[in-house]
Amino acid sequence: MKMRQLIQDGLWHNNVVFAQLLALCPTLAVTTSGTNGLGMGLATTAVLTVSNIIIALIRDFVSPAVRIPVFVVVIATLVTLVDLSLNAWLHDLYKVLGLFIALIVVNCAILGRAEAFASKSPVVDAAIDGLFMGLGFTFALTVIGLVRELFGSGTLFAQASLLLGPGFSFLETTLAKDFNGALMMILPPGGFFALGVLLAAKRVLEARLAARRAAAAGADLSPEGV
Image (tube, rainbow, N blue to C red; front, side):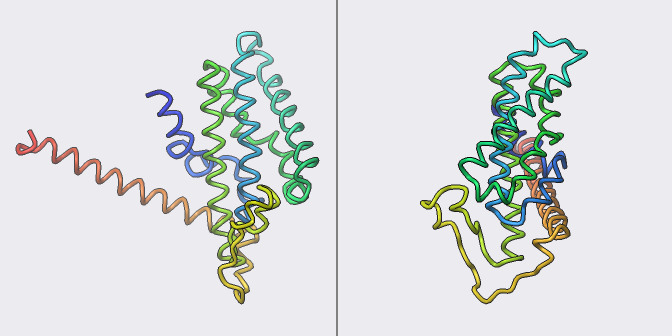
């Protein structure tokens, strides 16, 4: 049950972007395409998961007075490894995301999970929390990127082969060859617009699901249901 709650919180109920509204700098800056959003999300997921595991392992050996500097050193080390790995093996994608990969160090979502959860939890729980918080973040960035790319360029997953390899070039879709696109959607204001629309859609969906559950509970408590 606890594992299920961790998964649901990470992916939906406590989603880093759609519920906590954290990490908005990379969210608005790199989501000019679905591929960029997916790449940034996966890099952040790797750092978040491994940092949660390491911090859960050392939590009993770190004094409360120095815990934050230690957490930052752990996160910065992992970000450096991810940064160098992308530069070495995915250089074309690195040229797009390079600046923002380094900024994962100051991503408040990662330090927040380290302080609020990993430093107080067993290793397995911390690993699950980091993994699904990261996947929820990846989901949010990819969806926002796809919306902006669709209306800004008329394509989906452009240059996906840079991230996933030539075998995934089938994901690169051009929906309208003569579509000039709405420039605003691939500029920073388009990020705010797409995020606002998706947040509103999430709230409407949650309200409808809550109303449906309330109606079902009321039916069960009616004299006929009893």
